[in-house]
Image (cartoon, rainbow, N blue to C red; front, side):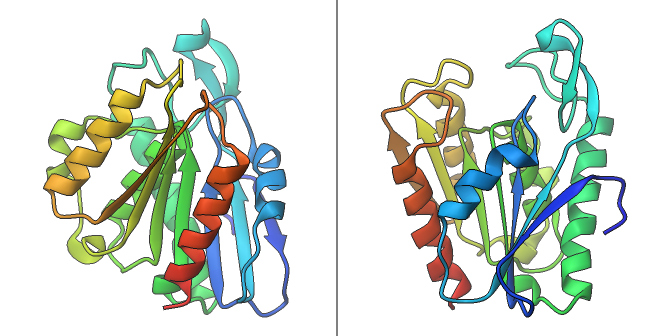
Length: 219
């Protein structure tokens, strides 16, 4: 998987029939997602692909270097298009690599938390082949006003799961609701959940995602 991203693979079988790709949030890394992945159980053999975002200067955090899918100047400002596109292309390369390895595209789910969720949603909606499912946790859609101009129709019927913490102090739940409404207005089927948490992932949320994704991969 040589696309310039360090990648962790959590494998529970030598012959997977499905893949779930998880993108971490700003300032985190793939290892932060591993405990959540280990909580999940599936009846089918599945691989989990956890790429690390590049280390870059993040303006919203006083220019400190940390892992990020793109620089973030402010929570209400659009992402730099070149960095966003670069991350989308690298994630798309991961999906294509899984397809080349023998996994059907409709057996690939892509998920992300926070900034990783924004990239996961964007990459999936732009991907030219049908995927199994799209999951965005505590996230948003960057430049949602122009989303219709960026999507491919291959995943117009791919189910989407969005969840958000009611008390999230970093990404207000209104931004997630805007994402939900934008997707719904474009014809996507969105399942929505709210949890009494902040900017984090809780156990009930993991269980809900697990059950929801398992159902989509079993079809």
